[in-house]
Amino acid sequence: MEHLLTWDLRLFFKINGQWINGFLDFLLPWMREPYLWAPLYLFLAVFITYNYKWRGFFWMAFFIVTFALTDQCSMFIKDAVDRLRPCRDPLISQYVRVLVVYCPSSGSFTSSHAANHFGLAMFSFLTLRSQIGKWAWLFFLWAAVIGYSQIYVGVHYPLDILGGALLGILAGTLSGGFFQRRIRLELEQTT
Image (cartoon, rainbow, N blue to C red; front, side, top):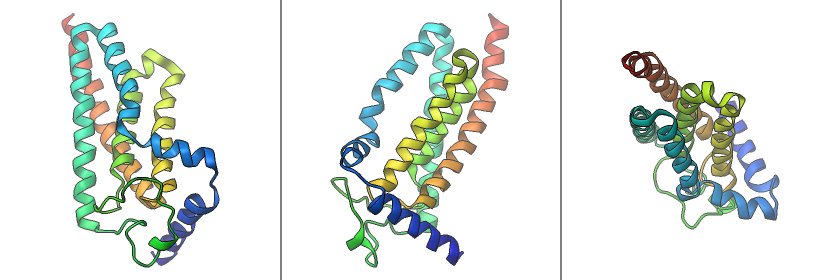
């Protein structure tokens, strides 16, 4: 475990302190902001409603449930693990580049941003790939950029992102799988 945490700290400082440039310093703090992604959420709502009419309501409901599930599970794990964020750790905080207005006081493991976005990416991938084909993989790129941003701005370690991503993928697989097996098939049979 000690080797894993040492690797985590070293990778954190590579991303947060060495693999940096002015463009990423400007861009990545914005990439983690929820309102920046509002157009994507709006596009998905319009796309689903246009293509599925009233059935799109069920998809949007599961999308929201997936978000809530990942968020609550991540908060539970954060409280249980109680890992300090790099920007709050008194042993290293003076060496951390914090590129956001504030450093959250909640725990670091797991990243809720990573859990939420990877959960939504997995749910969207499973439920939309038959409609959008290979473009469905872009949902994971979107989630990965947000996860990387969390490390870059100094509020999470790489293992926090990995843990959040795995939690999100699990939740997205469960909700997406349930939607595909139960709701979507029942809706198709009733039309």
